[in-house]
Image (cartoon, rainbow over all chains, first blue to last red; front, side, top):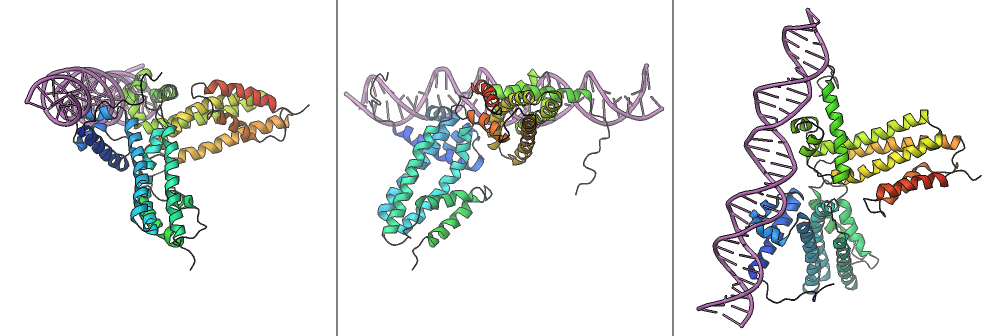
Length: 194
Length: 194
DNA sequence: GGATAAAACGGAGATTGTCTCCGTAAAACA
DNA sequence: TGTTTTACGGAGACAATCTCCGTTTTATCC
């Protein structure tokens, strides 16, 4: 089994391949969240300025594309945390990151149900994502607590639960707006008692 | 609003229309549970011996057909309870009904997730179904308790929960077999202590 | 039991989506 | 710069969705 090493990068990957992959993912994320998980893949290819063949070479099935979009979003969140943590004051970092989290939830709300009703649906993707996100919010909150900007008795995950919770009471379309207001309210309410 | 009475049945519905509707539902149930919720609707029409136009006249969208199949299954369950209760001894009625419930769960496992990821998905269908099923199992168990065939401290819904619970540990394909064995085990274990 | 009108049928076909194949083009390597 | 490897892209085969309308069947009224 496993005839050779995990990867044998005999060559540098072609620059246009990477560019195209990027653009397809970008367009796909917008299309999925805007028009649902069953938009035409050929349409996505067209909008990304590539042929259908190119899209299908990068992502052989709709499921593969959905998974890739989701994975990318999670990684964006994780990367944002690392960046914000070193370039912004604690409270601002938290606020901006929570704003990104709202966008992430919007795509998650579309993609996860779609993946669940597909043949070879994969729980594996979801497992790792939870880990990354929990780590990020923990670090962001810790830093803001240590700097005295947040109450020390704050459960980090509760902030995210509050945002996610809106999705069940607000109409899907209006969700991001409500959630973004919530970010300010939550942070305001989480400051230490003077 | 509501210009006239809910229904003005000016005519008796045509016999072939009813027959066809019936046959389409029958074939659709088999197709959905056998091959998933995205089988070709034209195929279903062909197998039912009608043209595509006929299928689409009865059920304008895939969602409508899925809903109709589900609703029909629930009504079958309710009707079976009414029949069994008057024609069988209590324990046999319960056993046979639970056997039907296993089949019902198999289609529910396919249809509900599919409906949930569709545009105008409707929670209304599910609401009434739960009511009907709860009523049925309650009556069946009561009767068997009164006749002394079941322990009086039995929570009726637990019997169904046990069956439904298998679906999360057994592979989807092998599910009905495991569940049917469970029916015997459950009933055996539910008899009064001698 | 016809005659008549309403209702339903069915399938051809327009439209749209999926996915592949392969000749062409571009990038990496030497 | 020449060669080789990799990727591109779009034509087109195939399949599914859904509609339109001429034909057939059915209920109803004499």
